[in-house]
Image (tube, rainbow, N blue to C red; front, side):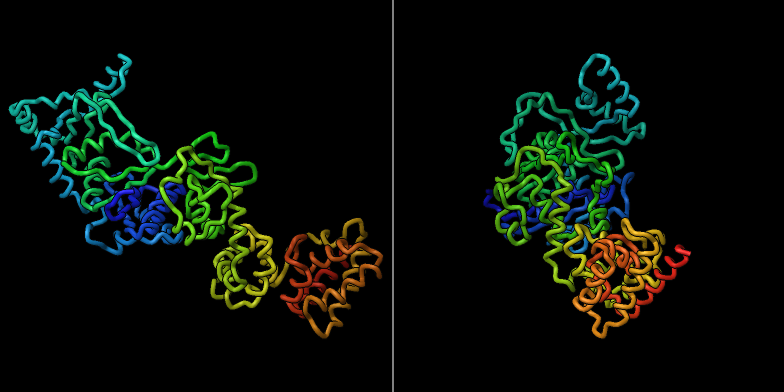
Length: 500
């Protein structure tokens, strides 16, 4: 553990919506900062202007907040080391790139795209790995002046040492050493004045006093080049920790960047997709904490406070971690069951409003929302599932095939008689709650000579319009006696027409 104050960053590029892989990276950085009373920084690496998406930036910030990942410094909260958009720091990168050129650690490259492509084609023909041939590294002052006289705007390349090795230590991967001759003279500053990722992130990490870099292990091959940059500037590198890749549920391949359907299930990959499907932020936080990190071999429920208390880099697994949708679904169901009935009802509001096509205010106003929420709490694994279970209470008319009113292994006539008797029993009730309703209807099972599932299946269709619903007697109590009688009357009329 470094003795310097902990300052970590999540530095996304707003070229797409927040992927769960990026969210896991942000979460690990956030946990590490909170564990050590450090600072969590949000920095927007928006120098790739061709792929920049305005709505992607909004999504990144909104989904981080939804997960509960607040930042201490960043675009909207400010901080002592801003600006926190890289596109607003171009003069800084240009100044430092020119400094490297003056000190002999970098050089101007005037090669045209056509020359570079021809060079790479020749390398491929010879079976060599593609890389810059350092054509411009040894230009004379006159040659450079000639190129500039032609109006060619150069890029700036790092002058990688031609001999020796570069080593660095990664907390997760250990010590890694590469031969310098295997490294390319990478571009630091493009001809349009924009930096490459390599230059911008090294400069920003130093100037923002980043103590630890936690990012996806796809960046591991770039670290030797970054270390050389730190050395060229005379700066001390931060502590590196490259996180294991997230695999798909099979554990055989890297998790997709796009949604996939496997069997009858959709495999979401964007944080917003999980939110829209009805996953709780608490469940997503808990689940992502355990993708590649663990407290021990048995703890599965990891609330935020417990995760902060125990998170450390040593427990991050070197091996890739599979993304288990089944585990996430189970965990989401667990967190749903921990909510109070009122809190669950409030969380269901946007899903009911969208599913029913009514306003959120209307959903909140209706007493059915809070009365039905505890009835579905044990039955749903994601919030969106509640809509199909609860919608019957919000509709004036039910839409179901009349044939469903015919009980299992019963005739239409017998089913009609059962409905009529049930209607009489319901109409006679002076107290209309679940125990009273059950006490009135259950004796009909013996009186009609049918099984309970036959009778109650018919009544369930009449009352809810569906074969599966929250507990029948509780559902009837929520609807009220008058609405139940209207629905029974409608069912009797519909089945009566079928019998005739």
